[in-house]
Amino acid sequence: METSENKSSENDTNLSSLFDTALELFNSLEKTDEATNTPEVQVQVKRCMKMLEDATNLVSMADMFSANEDFDEIPTENVKYFLLPALLGSLSTKLCDRAHRLHYVNVSEVYFYDFLERVKAYGITDVEIPKRKNPEETAAAGETSSGPPPSNTKMIEDMVNTRGGKLKRFRDQKELQEQLEILKKSMDNPNLDDETIRKYFVTLIKSYVMKAIDEINSLSQEKEILAFMEKRKDEGEEPRKKDYHPPKLRPIIITKNDVQKKVFGAGYPSLPVMTVEEFYEKKIADGEWSAAGAGASAKSLQDMANNQNSSQDTPEDLEKEAKVERDDEEFLQQQRAMDEYKDTHKRGWGNRHNRS
Image: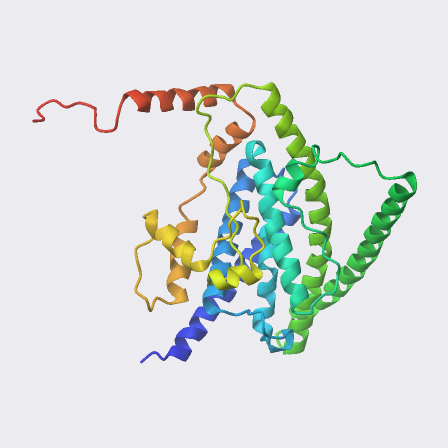
């Protein structure tokens, strides 16, 4: 008879395998020479994101992290899951959809801030996290500059501090990369000890801390540009009739319920974060998964995720999104024509011959 301990061990193995597979795919995407906006790469990016989202929900279900424990209490085999939001943030920046770029930038920021705040709360790093800006603040940045302009001395001081911070992060990142290269060779040892594994993933986490800070600074500048362009577009163009819009991305962070979401949730008020409970309800409501009993295990989520990943995000779907991104006039006209056709031809109004 299968005990609860055996079942828990099996679920942990499935989660670890899912994460390792996703991390391997992530690393291959980081090294690829193919253009990010090609349909093939976009399929792999979304596939990797789905795997990491499912891993995040499994981590949430297992309740691995809480706000009142120390890093030393985290088992070594669970340390690697701190990387989940950092990896999802990096992948979100690779999504190519010009019409919704600002949304994806905001999603990426949610992941990066969640990653930084969590690892800092656990004492893995003591870096200063960049100040967070809400989308509303970014959009209104051009309208709230009524105060006096900063002096030349202040501007020069800010530039020096910014440059000094970048140089320090560059040196720290280079040192961390050298350590990772050494530790990576040790990871191939079949007699690997627990201390080396822990040190490798802690070093990898610290490396992604540097990357996350650089990404946040870069995304902050991009947000201001995108918000300005969006404002100019709204002022200069008539809104299109029934434009085709693909579904937007919703960030999924490590949090099991609403209470934990308030503690660790890094989403903006206009950009909600999905808990594992909401994730289940959405999948069942959409008809993608069947309702499970109260005692459903993490393994059931694993199986559902594996089945789902194999059947979604075909090259045809990515080609449609690519056409929307580059504003393909013929494709958009077809979508509008189909919308108008559906308005005047309700479903079930077809051939009614021999119907009473």
